[in-house]
Length: 176
Image (cartoon, rainbow, N blue to C red):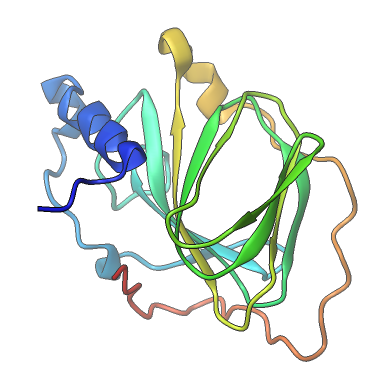
């Protein structure tokens, strides 16, 4: 039997060890039942599955995670936030810059960004770059999950041959 990647095991453990009140509203969700949220630049979209304040997901005060996609040939420009972050790439190809280091990523790549470190993502392929993202509150410091999100560079100009994500796209994400 194939072992789950370490990041997936960590996220599952984090959710299993949440206090009973953390999941009082729901114990099961189907990602296809949640609509995609689309960022202001129409290049990235996400579904928060656990934690957060967007409704429709499992409540959790100390963690947030979900699905995140970057449109083909698009850039999610440099930014930083107080929450540490882990991404696990499910599909697609890209360049992922964390601090001063750029990594080539694809399915199976796991990336860790420390709190406050500038990072950016570039989809170099013809298909969406699909990931699972994970934030947590180190040492129970929940304020990092709602802290300021700061862009450190201007948004790139839209690529004419790449249509933006439709705002109301509710197509299910195929993970495998």
